[in-house]
Image (cartoon, rainbow over all chains, first blue to last red; front, side):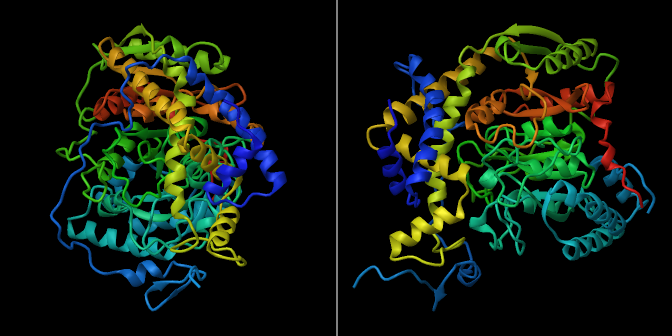
Length: 95
Length: 496
């Protein structure tokens, strides 16, 4: 599979990372060499093999629907770039 | 304060408990050393002298009252990917340059409860993505054995700090070798437990199915003592395992005769001793294996046919998980926000472009691509299937051997800048360490010799799931018979 410069621009958009034309060309060259290495995987027959997503076959635990944490929203919002009245401020999205 | 060889964790804990030395004296000595050597190495991103002296006083008081934790008064440094309440936690990134953690990571709290004294936070590759500590926004860390060389990564600051005797202990996180590879390149011990033994709560996520916190120290015994304080079930991490508490130092404390490893079968995978291994690394492995045989162990040739695909599997799975995990850095709830932007989407794009460095962006792009429509099966699912084949290789191997040994890295430390332009060459540094992350099995890197130029060589010992105590004991018996781990770089001799 060939990764194109258009692919680089498309995935940069999906990842919400601004990228100019020169940076796209530079990263394209590096990604091509990375995918050449990754493409070694295609040579292996994996017919009938169960994908392994995790080291242990853990079952996600359920817990009672009870409040266990105290309200620390002020501590957590202290590290935000812009906050007012307990709300995160972002540019207007609805006119 | 006289120039002296600073003690190990075990040695220091014993002297502190007997009140031969106070925790405050030990902390002051650590800060003296950090002030003299720290800036040259760029190992620390932050030191907390005030907090450390307060914690040391509390440790001294607890020792005097007779109910101190097992590591009371032992100085420790935490990798800057682990949250430390009230202290900056940057992940080596501009994105989190001014982020102050609102709570402690589970392993940080465990080590605090054991009585350790936090002296500071260590430099690292940005978001733990790197094998040389050169991707840090705050500049590279230097190798204490030769300042022109890298210390390894991503936990390079922790490794250099322990190697230069700035602190007897430090934490790291290991996603593809980020504890073991810098331990190898810096001439110390670095231990990665079974996935799920150390909680990931408060560890800023890179690749959640692989990330594993673990200790750095000079001896296997020290690693065991530190791991005891870091282990434990934590309901706040869904992958933390609920198992009875295990003392992983217990086999080390057992008495043993002249052949302490009698009956141990060491597996030697053909794939770990083939082409591409530096000649001096290969001869250090031969010498180490001869030592293990003289301790009573036998060696058996094994094969792990798919293990050579660990690197390509990793560079699909880890970036895929990273692209998802790092989407949380959007300039809204924490982290860097661009000064200028047109609208919300533009704010995301510019904040992320400015906040992340080149390697982090590359991995986010790789991850986004392999998860995107039309490529998911060909890359992500394919990599997960090969991951299963690698785990199957190991499951077969454990029928023939008890531990697997080989070099931690194919070569000793390389010069700063030597591999920064070629990501694939950099990635191949982790060729022997990644499998333990993909499978989730425990492994340690221990010092096993030096090159003629004086650079350390590391040996990796891998075990099956939950064989932490055995892996650490095998390393310990080697260290009882050898002194590679006791050698210090010349710069560690700090005058009073």
